[in-house]
Amino acid sequence: MESQAFVYIMANRRNGTIYIGSTVDLPRRVWEHRNSVVPGFTRKYECHLLVWYEVHDNREAARLRERQMKEWKRAWKLREIEGFNPEWADLYDRIAQP
Image (tube, rainbow, N blue to C red; front, side, top):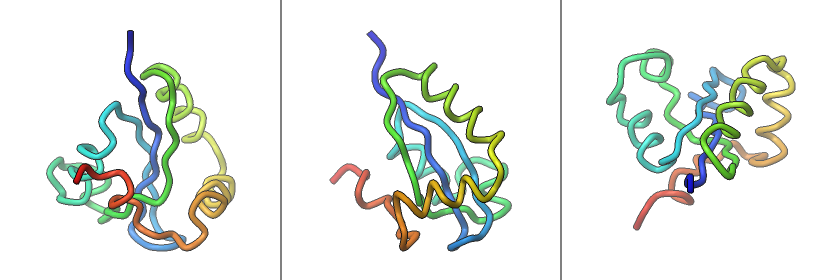
């Protein structure tokens, strides 16, 4: 039985650069982005704020949703964030382990 998986969006600021990813361990993955542990897009553009996430039943469903969202127009992605998190608050504390 597979565990749940997540699609998430990281941003560098409100209406700034955004990154969409998926993972089975959201707290760990966001921590890696926030601390620039892995070289790549989020390190280069300082996308350290978790501004949106969605839970899925399994890894494949999350990957499918990630790929779909990456094809969306930017305005659609921003509307998705605004609907979930209108203040663009950093949601890391909401999902981090105590």
